[in-house]
Length: 331
Image (cartoon, rainbow, N blue to C red; front, side):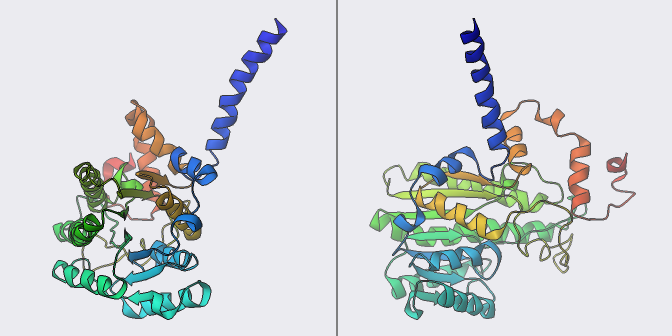
């Protein structure tokens, strides 16, 4: 009898220990497994040609820095040339590459007519594109009812259409070689609703649908892989550079007491997902990661995420609520 009790106790203990371990993680289970037992970026990515958009700051800058240490050939793209040159200097000073291994290529995702020429410039410089990291984008922070439609238009133009356009320019080259990796830095906002980011979330949902569908169409090209990376809150300037309800105004301040991941940790997990060809990964500190699992898999999610939960999120962004328009949120 005592043996049976020990067995039952062990069966109860193991799930409890697993749950406690999960509540301390900052990535989904697939990525967690790859980080423990999968291929190392140092083993897979070295020597590749990697094109990173949005490389002038935040996740894009950190990705460029960590990639430079792997000995890749880098293409750095964004609108701000001076910031790209600064990132290039950091890569040369701290990385394992030389001047000839980095191409600074200014790029505006909203200017879709320039994407074909930019792709030709990369191919002329390095002869191929092994990995395209679509990281560039914009955000906003405002109530949907207050947000000018111009904000929705700009975010869809940049985040969605700009990324689709550049991907379509690079894709024929990859199909010709029958190999390549297309990575889209999406967001947890492309999976779960986040108050104050309706236009941003809509663009991220669109990107998720585009990449999932594109993967199904490339069934004859198993060497071309797609990865959707969904980070939560990360230390960067995206929040303070976000639009408000108008495209003529930016927020100009950082979020309040919201738990954020270090950019270096986020970039490392992205590289691991790239090295292991993971289709979709979630990267976030707790409790945001746990909330994502609940929203995705628990049928009673609407009861769990009560109005008070969303109100707490909004208050974390330090956005003033209009008493007349949002009286209901204060009740």
